[in-house]
Length: 316
Length: 280
Image (cartoon, rainbow over all chains, first blue to last red; front, side, top):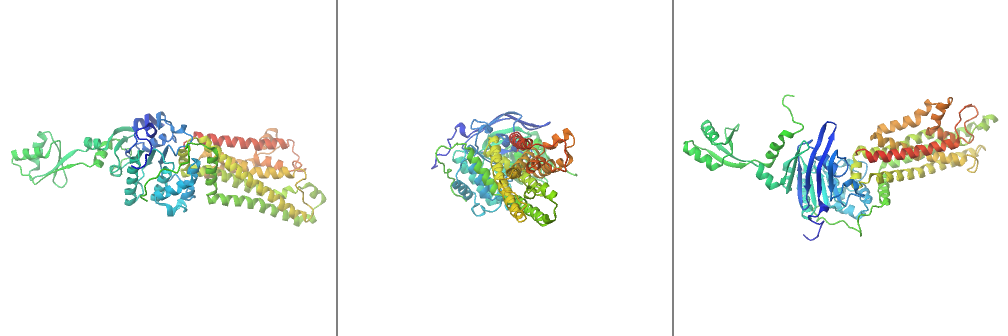
């Protein structure tokens, strides 16, 4: 690393939530969240739609007033700051721009309000690849281009803390790859990078740490590896001409067995070796014995299934 | 695109919170919208164009007018005809409503407040820039309307000069109507948070309401005198209401200026309070 970047591990780069709560009438959007988002790594902020991610980020930035608890960035409530861009940069919603202005004018006004020079506007436009579209009106931008503009705005103040709400929406595969690389680089520079998403697949390739919420409550706050080890269940796919016999034997051995539509059995709770020994003892032939790990996406879905706010119902 | 992230080009101590930076930001925002240019052009065109129209009508009819009618009329009625002020009231309150409502509606206000969490400073900058620019615009429009209309009227000797009693007051009142109406539009948009309903409400409050209230009762006269357009009318007319209107409770000049000031201050306060307290 050639540049020092923001001080690593100092309070300046931390987002701290303490009992953060937001109620709207009788619904509780964010329920007693206590957690710390640390610098030097990418923290994925996961939860189903309506879990309270956006409300949480808005409270961190002082846009929504908490019903209870506190949120601070670098130890200071964000609304107590005179200017924000050098303390935290955020992309909340790519639509939070006025469609009648050019990308350059939008960024120039933001930069100027924080005493940031016009040279920096050109720099961030270049970083997000919008140089050629800089003087076009934002109203004509695609969602992907607006996301890039929002990222450019977040980078303007070179802040130690960056927050992105669903930044992958509308990006093409090349854009997704680029954004992941950008987040990794920002974290390597010692910044706090907090990225929300409702899809595990979007963040599992760039996040070091995960915060999972459902219905406003904290479900998990751990490293990606710890999460994977805890919830990524090991399973074994077994094929046999005697599925009924094997299922009974495996159930007696304490395993859980799920028949797949194609005739295979998915076994959890016992390892492949134990299954082979059992089958051999009972003289049951095995045609397939394949260990596999459930994807993080499946694990995440299982974990938050109970907390999904909106579920598609059959037959309606 | 994959360029290395470089630190911002910082110039010495970074966390200066200068108010003039906020003014400059609002200045950029104002002039980078096409609708600003269109609205300002419309205001100028209405003020000058309708003054020319009124002056030409007087010019054409002047030879046939009785001496009584000539004596009763003020050259300021042509410089600042009521139709022109209706345009001005609508357009200026619209500009104000768009300045605030457009930021709420687009979501830009969230971006703005995340960049400048000190909301009252944002409100103060917005109010200052818009009021300042529209005062200049109003002054330009009013001066041009006066100059052009009096030049036309001079041809038949029906004009007045800037030094004549009531002339400067009429110009000032017509000029200041522009920023005061813009402030009202801003306040309503701050309270309603949507542009179109704010514009409709502004038109109702500023233009329609005065037509429903007359001056024949003491209480209704008081209510009418507290309204902007009637106050403007009082300030424009050099000798008060025309003689054929025999009002018992006539408005006073100082009262009319007080009405202007009260609307301006109240609207500015409401705008600041709304921006400060409402969730963007």
